[in-house]
Image: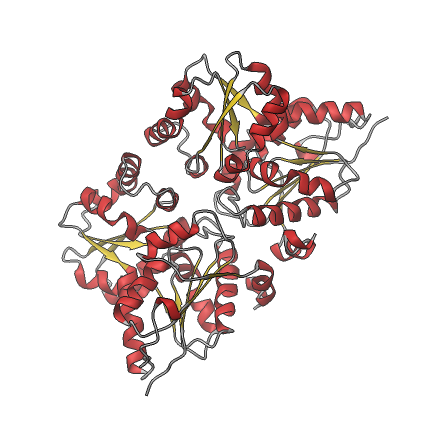
Length: 282
Length: 282
């Protein structure tokens, strides 16, 4: 058995390309349809209702493209609205980034103390706490919202004194609490991995959700016999859509993806809003 | 003559409340209808086309509310799309925040060297350069985009080492160029006034566009005989609308306004998008 349909992946912006990168590393033959909502990013500071509405619109747009699996490559949407999206998308598997990262962290922590960093909405939703404690209720979870990390990454200050000072400011409490494992709970954060690792020391393990999410996608497709046999997959055979051609987006995309994007399509927001007006209406 | 209709004011988010604050200081009897597009802010990193579309939607929503004057209290929209909005809104005066600030700076600079700080879109658009040089073509204008200032203000780090370091990073070049006047070309920046003033020294004059915009509004209404005679104006008689009840928005609004907002209404994005689908369609 095999399934040559593409995998759908969406994020509030371009950070989800860190997940795409890992998907291609594990499954070079797959095709991907990606949507980045660059006209309305970032989602992390918005209300749960708005995050649900935007996330559902993103999901429904990809559902029109005959995908075989949907990856919610946005920690904010995965934390706030995954169950809500799963209720509407019943035909295919839906994979968020929270559960794979939570499982990896639960396996890694010797001290049974895990830190989670993410957007304000991700931390407030508590989805990581629930997912980690579902693996092992004895694990203590310490969450910390780090709203400045996304703009720092987008400003390109990956290795800069401002970023180091900001990381100290956000992570001091987590380190005091004795965590030995920190989940990078936002698709932008892998770009700050080196700076954060330097600050927290090599004894603290950093979990990159992107990597574990890609592994989960591969496992699910393999179990369903849905991996693609084609050699015609990969970047050039994939489709990338954004809701705004924001300045510098090609540069940013390249830094998340570790390679140059092929042609990119613009999707009008009016198309998205027609798919689902508000979260309540679904 | 008098006109008891409200003044319409919009911003991409809550920063425009710094303009509302100044409007009330000068004209305590006026009523205001405010719209903050908190579901899609910030605008400053988006493309010109998207900024035009969002700005036009904001303007058209307020035009449905029988206002007597429209204030575009967003530097990004004022820089990128003011002429575009003026072409559609012909019935009443439209006041942006760029021209009042530019005029004030042109009067203040002895060295004829003015700095402008703002969002990426504001600086790229060059509207401040054109407006200042229309006052005096001999003035040199030095622009610098400061994308981290908005998230720093929203994070509440008004007086913090991270903010001082970021201000140094952004303003070093401007100071080297010998400007004696810097326009705070974003409605969030007045909250950083003290930190910036400390860095640049008291000899460098900081121009707060909000203040000068309010003066211009008063002058225009006075000239048209359109000031309100009522004592029933002010905060309690005004209307405040947002597109998302973002967490902490009341706290943030209070810091911009210097007072507590009365009741706030939620406006669905679908209402805005129906008013104007894309900039090209107008």
